[in-house]
Every structure is written in C-alpha cells, then in structure tokens.
Image 1 (tube, rainbow, N blue to C red):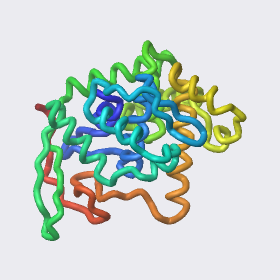
Image 2 (cartoon, rainbow, N blue to C red):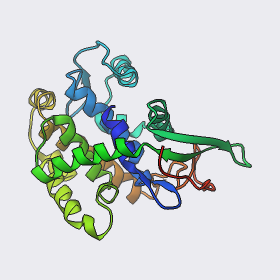
Image 3 (cartoon, rainbow, N blue to C red):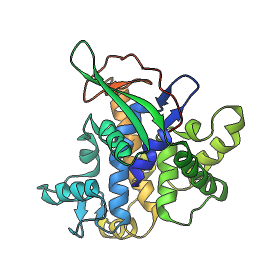
Length: 264
C-alpha cells in the first residue's frame, strides 16, 4: 500500500449502521500530498521553494506513483508545489477507493442517481487490515518517532487531514489525539513559519530526500496554506462527497447511503 492508500483506509470508519469517510473536505488534497511524499522518500523528486524537480525518471513499484512521476517530468515549466496541489482532480478520492477495492480492502456498490451521477457506497471494510494499520500508527504516536520515515509521514498527514478522531475515537481516544497533535507539531512548521525560513533551494531539496522532518514541514505547510486559501476565500473544498455515498467528480449534492455493514 502507498501512503495514500493507507490514509484513505484510515479515513474509512466503520459504524453500527453505516460506513463513513471522515474529513472528506481535506482528503483529496492530502492524497495528492501523499503522492509527492512517497516520491520524495523514494528519491525520485525534490520539492523546492519554487518548483518540484524530478531527480530520477525510473518508475517506482506502484503504477499510480509512476504515472504521477511521469506527469511531473513532462510538465514544462516544472510546477510549483502549491500549483500542483491546486490541480488536484476532484475524482481523486474515488480513484483511491478503487485502488482499495482492487486490493480487497473494501467492497463498494456503485449506482446512478436520478441526475445520472455515479454514486459509491462502501459496503464493507477489511477490519483486520485496518486494525493493523491503526496499531502501526499508534506505535508511532506513542513513541514520538517511527522505524520508517513513511510511518512518520503517514502520522503527520493523518493529523493534518483531521483524521485523529478516526484513529482515536470517543472519550477514550483523548490521550491518543493529544499525542498525535503533539507529534505533528514537532515534525512540521506552520505555513507562515515555513515560508519565512531562509533555506536555499538546493539545501531544501537535499533535505527532502533524506528525512521526513523537512519533508513534512514543507508539504504540510503548503497543504495547510492551500486549504486556508480556499476556505477563507469562500470557495470551499467540497467535491461531491458526503459521509455516506458520493459522486465521481460531481459538485455538491448528497446521496442516500445504502446501509453499509462492517466485516468482510
């Protein structure tokens, strides 16, 4: 699984009567950010202040990430980070849901509403796989570090996407949510601070390929900045999702949820 796959699996929360997706307003931007994070950690790209630079055009082990890498390499001029995030497809969450379906992590029912828009109901989720992911995330949150930079990146992205309640629900999860927030605060900068650090492009690019600390500071700083731009500008980040079913690429509207069940 890529970081994006794991992020969406974490966001899919089983309930007594239905399965819902948390933080759908931020999720597609977080998924787009996770792709850059994975490519950075694979040494294929670096994210500088002015542009995303492709360092190695060789495909990675995942077809989607290889396609993203190819798109970045073909862009002329090379895009900046905020520009790339603003181009996030409205259908990205649905695309990642299909990936989880291919991996048999979820089961989905698709149907068309009266307007002809395709809706997606999550009927079931692989609970053991999600529990294993939660256990791995919890080990990062409790220790404040991770055996791999990918695990740390997932934890920080989950916090930025407001998925802490999905990992640590209810009153019992208060301590876990606080620990996740503290971890994310340690391993990232605010958007304003990130933009004020006088680091040369070459130095930042080198750091991005070697550690999750600077990586998450730059990516999450821009991610938070982008989200603030949209929400304060009155545009919102809605993309046809609600907590039950959603449309592929549609804008707005709600759909009836088909009463999904947990289990496999």
